[in-house]
Structures are given as structure tokens and as C-alpha cells.
Image 1: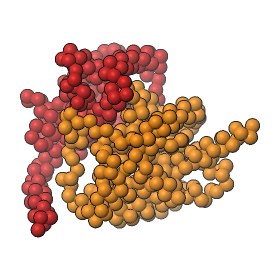
Image 2 (image 1 turned 180 degrees about the horizontal axis):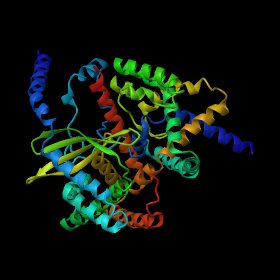
Image 3 (image 1 turned 180 degrees about the vertical axis):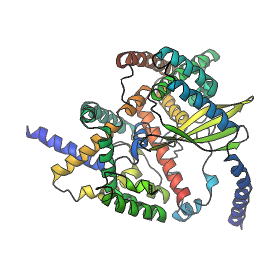
Amino acid sequence: MSGLRLWVLGLGVAMAIAGGVSVSTAETDALASAIPDLSLSPFPGAEPAGEAIGLALDPTRRPLDSSGIAEDTVVEDYDPWEPFNTSVFSFNRKVDRYALKPVAKAWDKIVPDPVERSLKRAFDNLSMPRRLVNNLFQLKLKGAGQELARFGLNTTLGVAGLFDVAKGFGVEASEADTGQTLGLYGVGPGPYLVLPFLPPLTARDGIGFAADAALDPFTYVIFPVAALAGTAVGRRVDERALNLSLYENVEESTVDLYSAVRNGYLQRRQRMIDDSRLDAR
Amino acid sequence: MKPLRGAWLVLASALALVPLTGRAATAGLPTDQLRESIDRTLKTLEDPNLRKEIAERRAALRGIANEAFDFEEMAKRALARHWRERTPAEQKEFVQLFADLMERSYMSKIELYGGEKIRYAGESVEGEQATVRTKIVTKQGTEVLVDYRMHRRDDRWLVYDVVIEGISLIANYRSQFNAVIQTSTYQDLVTRMKTKAVSVAEGVKEKGTALKP
């Protein structure tokens, strides 16, 4: 009995951490975490910070066609911890299948879609510190300003973030996380990493993930562990419920889900870092 | 001295590119042809007469896809270096299997279509290759970035890769196919693609189109 309770608590805490970073903007990101990159020499972006910023002025550096590096080359995704990752990956799938998905399905039945989306917005609103700090580190002053303005508008007029009024004023979110900032400063992704209850990561993004969790008010404000776990699980379930059909399709269209998720994640992260390089002006 | 020359070169080429990209942004042939295929697809999906005739609708959609996509090129790129190791007969079979796989993953997705808007966000052309950037705007205002990589075959521009939110479909399949071949065999890959076809077909029969969009 107590063993079970402990396990459930552990699950909650782990999901809390996962929820802390959660995936970023709306549906599109679930897609990213579901299908997941390419271009991976272990440490591709290992230039000094100065040069990384310099790159921002050179849009020609982004390859036009990353799929066609050469028709023949297979760029192997860097995954030296594959045996470990594979087993955690299948564990995570079981968690999704037997715990997260059924709960999300039930949730989806009870809760109307607009409410699900409102909740998601409220959770996103609270991760403003992560986006603000990383926009600043990435020298995206405009993005940082947008985040502040959004937080102010949505927390007040948008009723604790339930409604995105800022978007109506044309102030869009400026997504940024610590893994991306590290990438921009020249830290390569390192080995691919799959941890229990968490979305896919690399060694670099795992560090970024911990830093992002530290920037998330959920980690501190609602301290009593149960409440923390509760909210974070709620957040995770809410996201999953919003994306039920999306995940369904992903499994239909792959022949090897593990490498599909790994490649998709790595590609998307690389693209996000390339994009923030272009944006940082 | 050297880095300075490099910087000038970059600047010069950047300046040279300005007029080109400026013109390309006003949409050209690749965008027009892509738009035509997408418009036809949407029209088919919205056609009230076809709404109940699922088989008929699928056939119509398949027809459009066959004209817009270069499945052979896609299969070849996805198999990458393993392509050359296959006999011509195997290659032919693989193109068909790959087209089926694409069709299934696309078709199930496309049938969830619920009035999303497609915006064309520009194109860039380099010789025989082009990238057309689009945005799918959902009713809730969420944007999904979808880039189509195209190349010219005779007088038509055909899609050979689709990049969704920065994820190249072909690169993704390439890594999957490579993983299966490396850890198992090419035959196993073919078997998986065939059984996938069967299990998905059965899944569709069971579930119908009951998926919530």
C-alpha cells in the first residue's frame, strides 16, 4: 500500500519536472516531441559565443536543404547511450499507454476543448520567467519585452492567463528555453538522452531542462508536494488530451518509433537553435 | 587579412541575393503549382458529395498526390546509401511501399481537416530546386510551419520533401530506415512496411474516422 503510494508520488514528482518544461507552443510542439533531427555530429555548434552571435548576421549559413545534404549520406544521430535510452523509451511508452493516455481520454470527454486550451494558456503564462530569462540571454530584447507585456496583459485582462488577450493586441509569445540558449552559445547537443517520464532530451537539453524547472514558479510557489504533483500532472494530462489524435497518427506512420522520435527531436532542436541565431539581432 | 576577405565575400553575396529573394518572395511557378494541388485537395475534402464516399474520396486524393509528389525521389533519398545496394526490382517495390506509407500517414492526417487556412509565406528557388514555405493556421490561431521542398522534372515542380516545424520528413524516414537495416535487415524493413499497411488498414476499419479532430 505505502509502496504504491510512494510510487504514485514519485510519478507525480517526475511528471512535475516534466511538466515544468513541458513542450512549448500549442499543438505544434506535441508534434515535435512525438515525431522528433539531423545534422548531428556530436558537437556541431561548438563555436565560441562571439562567433555564434556573429552568425546571426549571416543568413546564408542555414542550409537550404538539410534533407539533401547529399542524397547518399546517412547522418547517424549521436546516441551512444542507446541501450539505456531504448529501455527507458519503452517504459515511457507504457506509462503513456496505461496511465497518461487513458486519463487524458477521460479528461478530454469531461472537459470541453476551449477549457482545455484555456488551462494550457494559464500554464504557459506561468512559465513566463523561463522565456523571459532566455530571451534576455539570447539578446532577444524585443522577445523579452513581448514576454513581459504578455504576462502583464494576460495575467490581468486575460484572467490569470486563461485568455490570450495579448495576441489580440498583436503581442506574440517568444519561445525560448535554456537548452536553446546553451546551443546558441556554442554548446553542442551531446548524446541523446531519454529519462523516465520526460520528453526526449540531449545531454545539453537535460541541463537546460533542470535550469528551466528552476525558473518555473510551480517548482516553488505551490510547494506542498501533492499540490505540485497535482498541478503538473494536470498540465501534462491537459496537453496530452489536446493532442490525442496527433499521437495516434505518429505511430501509424513510422516503421521504427524510437529512431523516429529521436531524429525528430534532434532535428527540431537544431532548427530552433538555428532560428534563434537568425533572430538574435 | 583572410577573415576580412571572407566578410566582404559574405557581404557581396548577401547584396547579390537581395534582388533575387525580393522577386522570389512574390511567388513563382513552384508556389503556383503547389497551391494548385493544395486547392484541389481542399476542394476534394470539402466536397459534400464525396463526404460519404470514402473510397472514392481516397482515390481522388491519391490521384492528386501522385501528380504533386515525386515518390521515387523521396524513397531514394529516404533509403540513402542503402538504395544502391538494392536490385532494380527491389527498388521498384520499395518506391511503392514508401508511397503507401506516405499515403497512409498523410491521408489519415488530411482527413482530420477542419477548415484550417493555408498561407503561402514565400519561396526560394535555386536552379532546379525550390522551397515553398507555408503556414497552416488552425481555427484557434495556432500556426504550423510547413515547408515543401520541390525540384523541377521536365516542366513540373514536384515535391520531394515536406518539412514540418523544422522536421524533414525524408530525413526522419532516413534515420528510421537506417536504424532498421543496421540493427536487422533490409528484408525486415520491407516486412515491417508491409505489415504496417495491413495493421493500419484494419485499424481504420475498426475505428472508422472516429478520431476527434
